[in-house]
Every structure is written in C-alpha cells, then in structure tokens.
Image (tube, rainbow, N blue to C red; front, side, top):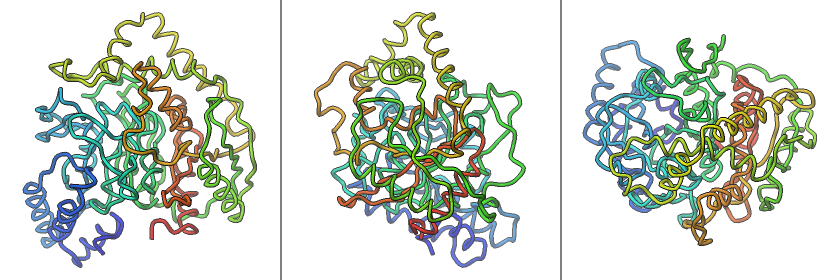
Length: 466
C-alpha cells in the first residue's frame, strides 16, 4: 500500500488503513537506504516532516475534512522557494539561503495536503538537461547509476523512480519535467502557459517559458496535482481560465477518436537519433492505432531550424541565470557566469528582436495546429540517458557550444515552452539496454485534458503505473 500511487496512499490514510506517520517513516527509511548512491535529496527536514505527519494523523482521527493529498509526503525541487527551507538553487553562491516566501506552487501543494520531505537536486539555476552541480554533485539514474536522470528536475525524478518518494514537485522551462520523466520511466506533464499562475511575489523573467508541475508514476497522480495547481489569477501577466471539469474526473470519460501525427524530426536539422528513441515512437504509434485513433506520419513545417532558434531561445533563457539573486557571483559555475555576461552584453534591441522572432515562431506553429492532426507524437529525447559527465566530456568551453550540445540530447522539448503548448512525456518503451525511453505528445494550448486522457489509455495498455 505504501509503495502505491500518491492517490492510493492518500485514500489509505483517509480510510485509516495506514497512518501518515507510518508513510513518512517508510519513505525516510528509503531515503536513508538509497540516497547515498542516488544523491536525489540534497536537504532533508525529517523531524519537521514527522511532526507534520503526526498532526496529519490527529486530523484523520478527529474526523476533520481533509484535502485530497492529506498526509502524503512530497519533496520540493531545489529551485522553488518555501518559507524556512534551505534553497540553494544548486549553487555554491546560495548555499546559505533560506526561503522567505512560499511560491504559488508550494503554497498550493500545502493546501492540497502534501507534507514536505525536503529538497531534490537540480543543476545550478536549472540551466541544464542533466542534474550535476559543484555544490551537491551529480544525481544518478536509479535504472543505471552510471547514467544521468536528466534535468533539471533530475533529483525529483530519481527520488520517485527509486521509491524514495511517491511523487515529486518539478518545474519545466525547456523540458525540465519531460526530460527526467523520460530518463527515469515516469509521467511528466508540462502544462500550458498560464495554466499555473506564478503568484504576486514572483516576476515573469522568461516570458512564460517556465511552469511548475510534478513527476509521478501514473497519469492519475499527475492529473490530480494539476487540479491542485491550476489557478486563475486575473492580475497575472498571463493566465488561463479555470477548466469546467477537473482533470482527474476527465480520466473517467471515453476519449474520442483523435488524429495523431507522429514524427521523429524536430525543429533542428542534423540531430541524430538513437534507434531506441525512434522505436519508442513507432511502437507507441502502433498501440494508438490499435486503440482506434487515426495515426499517421506527418512532416511538421517548422518555421525556423538550427541555430537561429537556439540563439533566440538562449537570448531569453540567459535572463533566468542573470537575474538570480545571489551575493557572490564568483562562486557561480562558469556556464551560468557566461550566461549572465551574455545577458548583460546583448543590446535591448537584440533581446527584443529575439523575443519577437520567438513569438513569430509560436504563432506560425499555432496558426496551423489542428489542420492535419490533433496531437503530435515524437521522441522526448534524441538519445538514451547519457553517462554522468557527458555534457562536459567533449571539452567544449564556449557557452553557446555547450548549450548547442544539449540540443543533441533534447531537440524536441524546448519549442513547446516557446509556443506555450502542453506536452507530456510517457514511459511507453524500454530500450534493449534496459533504460526507459519516453515519448512526447503535444496538444493545442489549454488541452491538457486530451494528453491526460490519452496517457491513461496508454497506461492501461503499457502498464507502467501498476
């Protein structure tokens, strides 16, 4: 029971079949046993967690009205601020920082009944698709500890995949939920731009590229967390209306026959794919066809390709590093120092032109979306989870060269952050190497319901959430 989904654990707690204290102790024992090798957790609050679990138990025994995830433990990614928590952003320059606020997502997770275990590792400032930093070291993939769990929510994914947590908070600014979900055999949904409001105390530095979410073992958990995090904020820079129906309840409805296009070509040319990533798409396409959907290969007319898109993306992305509030930039890792310098050296004209080109890219994609297909199926990654140290093994030093090397791993994820579309990575395939391989499915803006309903269909066939 304790090893089940977050929803199953919550239901068992409410039914008094298990105590929140027992649940907390179970997962803390798993962290004690597994984290020394995996290095997913970088800060723990064991005593506070057990105290909150005891309070949650007392609420159950009193017969209080309980939120959906009452008493379920969850770790926070080490980029999201929470009151009184250490929050290092994976950086030596913030190693003594203590949170002064709850971000909107953290506050909503509290409201949903979760109790916080601690914090999971991230690359410094969330910049990379692998979870390695100088302060905390590398997080390792539970499926093969010589490999990366992906990034930037790699600590979160490794914790869930290893069984150290039933579910984990994550965030995504260029693939950082979907990449580690693929690497670790989990479900990872990036919601639409504006689906989850940032809250009044968090500025929108990156034009809505970033959003919160979770990594989980099953689609229902992801749907329920999206329900908990979905907010309409009329004062926000960008926001979406609250859906008429909960995402969790959508899973009980029959999905209509959908037109699903599949492709193994992304917006960048010249990127080679591992055969296992191609096989994951073709196998998933076959399953979807057998489920009754209209599935066919498509060629996407990408408005831009290659380095122009990458450079414009970096022009916006580097602001996320440049505006980090740290005291001593001399302790920041060289890559993020270079990103800060890049941000400060580009003219306002060049920056605005990059933003406008990205907006044009997004508009061209969205203008034709739905003409030939409802959903787009592609690989999540171009390669199997690479070895620890892969990114720097080439000896590259230039920041743009390093980030372009990242594209060799993740050419399929970042464009969804530009367009603001929802995208989900689903663990439909296992490579001959034994490593999990995810596929990405992308929907029109605000259609997370289709992704979750289709994900539930695939989960029933593939059985990954069992």
